[in-house]
Amino acid sequence: MKDIYISAIESSCDETSVSIVKNGKEDIVTVVNSQIDTHKIYGGVVPEVASRLHLENITLVIDEALKKSGFDLNNIDAVAVTYSPGLLGSLLVGLEAAKAIAMVYDKPLIKVNHMMGHICANNIGQSLEYPLISLIISGGHTDLIYMESENSFKYITQTLDDAVGECFDKVARILDMPYPGGPNIERLAKEGKDVYPMPNLVKGSNISFSFSGIKSHVNNLVHNAKQRGEEVNKANMACSFQNAVTKSLVENTRNALRKYNVKYLSVAGGVSANGFIRNALREMCESEGVTMFVPEVKYCTDNATMIGAAAYILYKNNQFAGLDTKASSHEELQIEAI
Ligand code: KG4
Ligand code: ZN
Image (cartoon, rainbow, N blue to C red):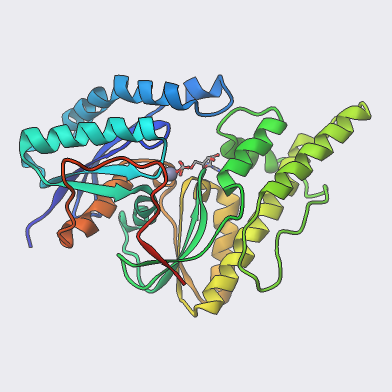
């Protein structure tokens, strides 16, 4: 079969990224321009600032990807882009750029759901096996999904309130650490001990995520200490928090694997860059006789490579999009409730 080269664009949040991916597996080139240094100043992503920076950077990032790879847009087979979910103004920039390429170079357009992109990060350099349970842990999502095959999604559960990455970011802020909080909490937790009592986030064999309670709990501990004129030990707090959250991710995933009798687990999303969480999930999988897939760390947080990998599945199924495709802030995967 002929090799398929897809150029993909990702701009749903605070990364402007462009890639060329071969056969949904091979990263020919990926450029990621992160806006983190700007958003850090405000303690989180400011949507208006994000879309303006995407607009300033998108053509530069496309040019850089082409220069680095020596590729010409005439030689790609399709152009793919994230259309949902995400920040509307940010999504629009990538979508309009992709439409322009599709029109000028007469290439098919493929619209990719960002969450499918995260899952397909696991097809880069390896191949997912099915049926599987997919755990998506990012700044906006904490989902367990049952997948019978590569294009079939059935939600098992979604967080009842905050996403796990959002919770890492908020707890980091409470502890006076910059955005994004996840990597900072992970670093600090390595120096701490699990000594602060945390709410139990595991409810027997139930499959249910909720993280707003633990965030308020950390907030209360910090404020109560301040009122007494004391300081909390931040490293111990980060360690205790990370342990409690990890336990919830591990036990809920174990319950889902057992309930649906599945032997493959796909872990993805920004929080899956966390080494402590990766190890804990890996240990659980070993004890359950389950094979775990997790992307290389650089493909865990937002990138266009994963969008190119997901687009390849849609390409094979002739699922192309029109130039009237709209961005949507909240469109979930095409799913059925289990
Ligand atoms: O997938 P992602 O890049 O963007 C969304 O689609 O949301 O995820 C970003 C989230 C942020 O909340 C960030 O704090 C978290 O992933 N994150 C981490 C780590 N690296 C990124 N959380 C915990 N530990 C990390 N090492
Ligand atoms: Zn993401």
